[in-house]
Length: 382
Ligand code: HXC
Image 1 (cartoon, rainbow, N blue to C red):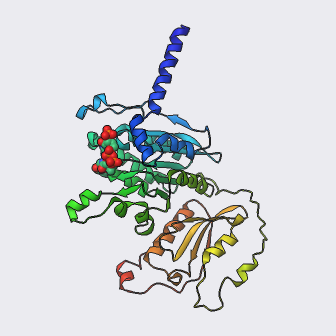
Image 2 (cartoon, protein in one colour; image 1 turned 60 degrees about the horizontal axis):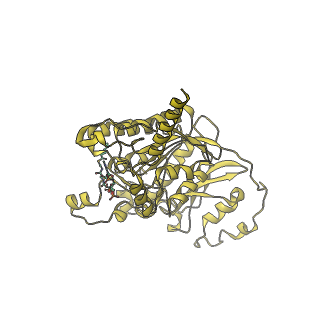
């Protein structure tokens, strides 16, 4: 009996090892050669050490078409589970590009949905690490049905738990819509892309020639489209900043925003602020200096720093409490309000509202930016 048990344990260990290998060594090496971490390495960087509890490690897809019956990988291209960040519970999925390009199959989707359901039920943030070629082509409409299930949960979770997406690879087609409706999107420079149709399709349909980077790279989405919030130079930096962002966010809309002891005096005097605002109203100054000096421990987590820079948004702490800051930036376009800055601020205010985070507004604004471009852009509505 004991030898039987040892055999079973050995088999289990072998299966675990196989699952951890994802799509195999060659594909893992290719992932590393592109400067990308694997799905599992990313989870290790993201979560507190040793806190990851994996679910559904051995789940495989159920397709037999296109020779798929004999192409199965334990986990089916996504690693899911729960863990802790700074001691707090979070749920996570991490797509594995080494397995069918991280593409979404029916079972891959149901694994993601399971952790989303748990996050909503238990009131804990949901973090998605995205690295996916979109719908699993071999599954056709079953894959698309899987997307529908994921999107539905994004909507149910919206305003209930914080949802954070990190784009860490070529997210094409269906892979972009779910992140787009989450609260914060981080991207990695040089290795992550988001587009509904890639450069080849663009060329065929509109005859426009554009590189993947220009069409949907981190630069494009953090400066032009505002689809993404912040760009980072590599996977590790992006994941570390997710950990930092979470310090400002409540676990759900059912609990108070975080409060933590800070090593800063609430009556600290900043003499330099006496002369920050110039006596001449025509002279610009940097509102970020004021925000940083107001903040506990001079710590400011800025969101969308490279888009609509005439308004500044982000999180600070005041007396230990988490606070959202919205501030006009006199240094850029004299801090006037236009379509982009209005959209940027409004979305942020909506997030803070949903999660009971107080807002500090710093106002120094000459008014709206006049002109046809603004009116045609719908400034009135924005
Ligand atoms: C199945 C896929 C896949 C997919 C990639 N692979 N995308 N398998 N379904 N969607 C597989 C490849 O066959 C390959 O397998 C491995 O993943 C790595 O892909 P490569 O092409 O070698 O990598 P790379 O050159 O880096 O290119 C990555 C890529 C490209 C840009 C993502 O693979 C690509 O364009 N894929 C297709 C994208 C796409 O059309 N997706 C569907 C969109 S439609 P091997 O075995 O060689 O390692 C959609 C509709 C959603 O999503 C609608 C929702 C409502």
